[in-house]
Amino acid sequence: MIKYRKRRQFKIKSFGLFLVVMTWSLAMGWLISFATNAQSATLTSEIGTVDVVPAQYQLGQEIYLENCSSCHLALPPQVLPTQTWKNILQDSQHYGAQVQPLVDPPRILVWRYLSTFSRSIREDEQIPYRVNDSRFFKALHPQVQLQRPVEINSCVSCHPGANEYNFRRLTPEWENTN
Image (cartoon, rainbow, N blue to C red):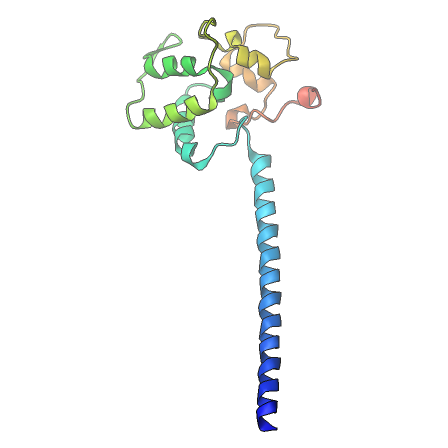
């Protein structure tokens, strides 16, 4: 009789422990799921560039932004082809201004970022030097009729967040165009 009671108490305690562990696991799983969904929702709403930048390219992006946005708006790499970015990184004559080119290793990090997110040009295509000559810029702005040539600082007129490298946010007149 005593043996039976001990075994029964052990089963009840084991079942109680099982219920506590299951409840704890379900609660933690629910909380982690909630936190993950909330974090990913925040991330996507804060993304200002065209593509999400994985962690391995973020330092290159930061160096790019730090160096380029000190003089003008930093453009998303998607706007110009890879070869244009390569020429820009190697040239000390930057659109008529004398600049100090980046040196390695920061140059390599910036190059990895730019080359990963820019696009290649066709064999028969000339390498565009200006933004408004880039077919990628035109493809990203299909319904835009430009009254004057594009200047790098004129992006703010349609993209009010361009100074913060957010090209997804648009002025109200462009917000609902498809």
